[in-house]
Length: 253
Image (cartoon, rainbow, N blue to C red):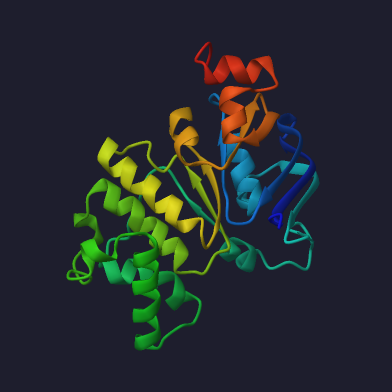
């Protein structure tokens, strides 16, 4: 049976004032897949991610046309709760920033803010989130120690766990391995492969090799346009567009 579309982007244009950052994006992202977006700097990748949960609303003078549908519902509908949207479509940024508190309090912070007070329920949420982020076995005996004492790779997985604790359906990651060593990067990639069983994942990779390793489908962005999208195998072996071929083979970018 074909996988359902989790997100559908239709004729989507985005503007910072008079500058058009995204141009007529049409794309379907299916459930329980890793969709990777790659391209050179200033190609619109981060703007695209932030549009999917309306973090772009925070930018003064920005505007858009077209539609983004989450499970068939327009995320720009005036009746939509932004808080609920950002819970359902969570985002992990390139630089892990643990809160200056314990590992447990980092992960339970979001659920507490959303009104969950029962200690037993919080313990369940924290353990499940840390297990999902493949961090539980490394920290289960020191949950009350400062999160700032974790390694860089562990801090990034902690930030993933903190997002998962809110119960998202879509997990977006903007170059989550950009500052990590190869061993930590491998840990993050293995974590993402496990997470796609439960979540839809949209990844801006640190490099195109990472996209080739972990993604089910890929999209190549250039100058605000989606040049081409398809299965990872076809994008990297038989791309349809010469610009895609030139980028994945290292002729530019």
